[in-house]
Image (cartoon, rainbow, N blue to C red; front, side, top):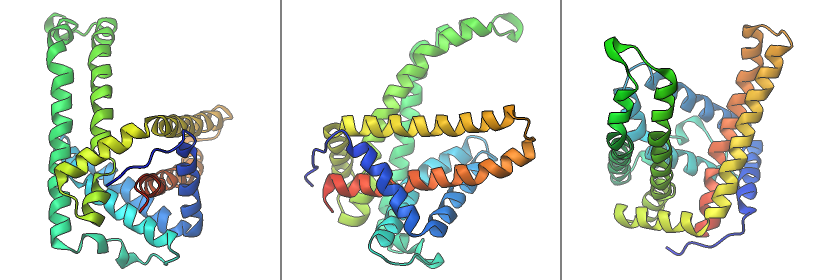
Length: 251
């Protein structure tokens, strides 16, 4: 698989194309955005194991998202039963599950690598009898958090395109991870712009909520107003994964 090298402004193009996909079938994408939101919420009801299950399922959910966006882009109408269709092939389902296990292993490894070297400084921030020195703890957490952030970016590069490469092209997992890493590295500036743009969008949504709260709007009304906004923004985010793939691999 040959990955194209795109200009920096491709990061904005992916977001715009995600918005265009959502405009074509907003109800379908909003439904999927709400479904993923519910799954994420339920994963936190079972500490640790819920998050682990969600990580394992992430490649499969990503492939379902990409497949739906490909259908919408080609002019097909997404029906409820079509969402699970990409996983009906047993071989694809098994390979994506194995990819999910690999993703979980990488996340655990990143957490251990980011934590173990700094364990002494973290425990030293906790004084006798369990009393916590908050300032010392914040300082001690800086290095682990930065280390984990760097490792997680590298992990994301490995797995970003892997579900589509495995699900659509039957690429073996090792090669899919390698191709994904190379593709992300070749387009690192576009992905940087993409990530910064989404960070700005989410910060803007949070500022909008804070502004509504400052105007004296009650919590219940603000939640009623902001929930559709959050669902819509998440829907565009998920839809933008598809143009990010097809523009890089020309498929």
